[in-house]
Length: 315
Image 1 (cartoon, rainbow, N blue to C red):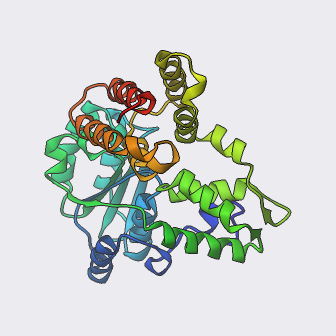
Image 2: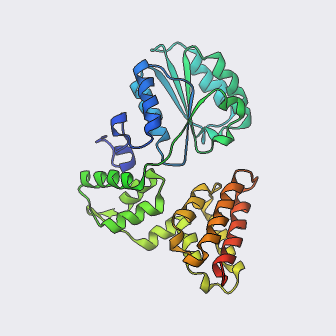
Image 3: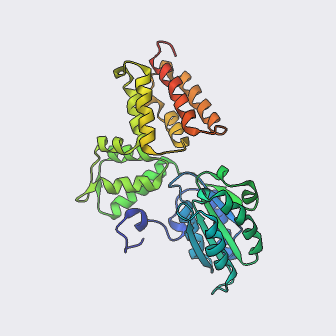
């Protein structure tokens, strides 16, 4: 535990594998890398808050290496490859091995990826790369073919609950179980956001949830509120307009988490007689998401059909 941090997410970010929860299949491979003091070029992919950056930092802290960290959401152009990365890879270091972490690598430009393809091979004798990304399909195939890909997922909610309770106890925070469950349900599978939200609603060593504020800060919960209160909208188009505005304000461009939430929490907004129809619509939206060019159009199309089902007399 880092006592120099007051931000819980950083204070309780594990430095070693002992403090990491979940993704056992990845952890076993990481243990092998640490034992061999070497790694392959790898890609850690998965949703926000599933531990990609944490594992990357554990690797470079556990292996004798020089390392360079680049956040590709900020530095994503070809100049980063030509200057920072190539300069680091080509100069003499303090250790035999160099590791470059390209965090959020799915933000790299097409030119940067094309240039990086050759860089992976030219410096392969002494330099390794760790890519992290939310959407691996955004990486070009020549890059993906040069990486060992590991998909990270969030641990089960029960494990996350125990982990967060441990943090609250260490911080001397009292809490209501129902409030903590509501936070986890609202922000899961983003463990980072769960911890941040718990700290946000902690005051004078007490976790007290303001449910309305939680809804206002989470676009998915706002959409669920619309679906739960469809009777107040005279026309279906009124509900669709509100959902479109919520999505526009959120600036979210990918909707896998939303689709999964609609399935996992179907009882919150859907009566039993409509459930089968809603599940089919959600499943179709998930399938179409893999092929669609514009993810927002696809998700709004799903809501048009979903609202029609929810307001119909027969599912």
